[in-house]
Amino acid sequence: MIRHRAPRSRLPKEFVVACAGAAILVWAPLPFASVPETFRLALVALFGAFVALAAACGGRVFPVVAPLAWVALLGAAPMLGARFGSSWLDGVSAAPELSARLAALWLGLAAFAAALAWACRRRRARLVVALGIVSASGVQLTMAVLDRMLGGGDSIWRVAVAPAGGRLRGTYVNPDHLAFLLLLALPLVAVWAARWMRRSGERGGNPLVAAVVPLALWSLFLLGVAATGSRAALAIAAVVGALQATVRLARLGRGGRLLASLLVVAAVGLPLILGPLGEGSALIRYAESSRYDLRFDQRWTVYRTTFALWLERPLLGHGLGAFREAFDRVQPESLQRDWWHAHSDPLELLADVGLIGTVPLVLVWLALVVGLMRRRLGGALRGDDGDLAEALACSLLAGAAHCCVDFPLANPANATAYLALCAAAAGLLRAYRVEPATTSSGRPGTGAVA
Image (cartoon, rainbow, N blue to C red; front, side):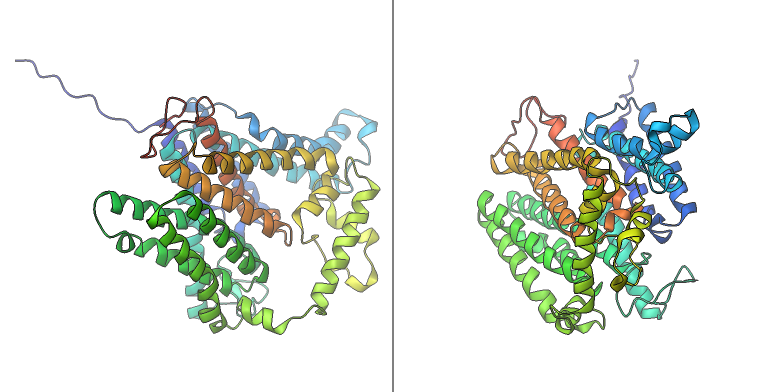
C-alpha cells in the first residue's frame, strides 16, 4: 500500500517578513535609540536587508509611502545638484551634507514601511507588528526599572550621558522619547485585553479573569509613562484612553462597557495614586511648574520663531534636518542658543521641507486615521480586525499629539515604530479595500486577506 505524506504546512511569507520587522522594532531603541551616526547607518542597513527579504518573498511597493520617498528626495536634492552641476539647486538646504545623511534615513524608512505594509495585508502579520511595538516598549520599561534599581541613571550601556533627574528612560537619552514609545503601546495592550475578554466570554469563561494579564501590563505601561516625567505624554495617555473607552462603549456590549469603565478609572486613578511615588514623575513635575515657568515661556518663543522661520521659505523650507543651522540665525538671545529642535515635529518639518514636503505626509496620515475610524465606527471592521483598527487609530492619534509638543520623530527608533504602525494601518485598509465586509466573529469577508 502506498502512503501519501500530508504536505508540510509553510508559514505565510508575509508572516516571516512581519517577524523580521518586529525584530527591527525591538532592536532599534537598544543602541541609544539609533541616534548616533554609526547606529543610524546600521539601522539603514537593516532596512535594506529587510526590503531584500520582502522582495525575495514577492513583496510589492505600496504607494502610501510615496510622501516619505519624496521628502527623502528633497533632502538629497542639494547634494545631487552639486554632483551633477545643477546651480538652480544651490541654497535649497542650509546644511546640504546633513540633509543628504537624513535623506538616506528617510529613504530607508520609506522602504521599510512599504515592505511592511505589503506584509500587513495578512491579519497575522498585523498582529505581529503590534506585538513588536508592545515588546519593544516592555523591553525598554524593564531596562529602565532595572537601571533605576541598580542606580545607573547617569549612563547607558556604561557610557556616560546627561543625568535623567530620577526619570525613567531605558536606553533613550531623552526620557520623553521613551514616553512616546509607551504611548504607542498603550492602545494596543488595551485591545489585547478586549480580545481576551471576548474570547473568554465566547467560551463561557470569566472575561475579567482572562483580561488580568493584559490589564496589568497596560497599568504598568501607564505608570511607566508617568515615571518618565513627561507631562504631555501623561495627559495624552489619559485623553486617548478616554477616547478608546468611548469608541468601545459605542461598539461593544456588556464586556466592552466593563473594559471601557476600567480603562477610564485606570487612566485617571493610577497616575494620581502611584504617579507621585517617583522622584521625577510627571505629576511631581506638574505640581512644581506653572504657566510662568521659564521652560514654558521659552517653548512658546521657539514656536513663534520657528513659524517666522518657515514664513521665510514657506514652499521649500530650509532643508531636511537643517533646522538647527537655520534657527541659529534668527533665534532671540533670550533662548541662550541651546535649542536644537523646535519641540514640535510638525513645525520643524514645515521649517525644514516647507509645504511641498509636509502636506503630502499630513494627507496620508489623515487618510489612515480617518479610514480606520470610519470603518471601525461604521461596522465594516469587527472582531480582531476591528479591535486592531481602533488601537492603530488611537496610537497614531496619541503619537501625533505628542509630536505637536515635542520632537520624538527626530529619534530614528521612534520614527521606525510610528511608521510601522502606519504600515499596519495601510495594510489593514488595503486588505478591506475591495469589500469591507466581516462576519460577527471578525473573520474577513471576500474583500479581505486573512
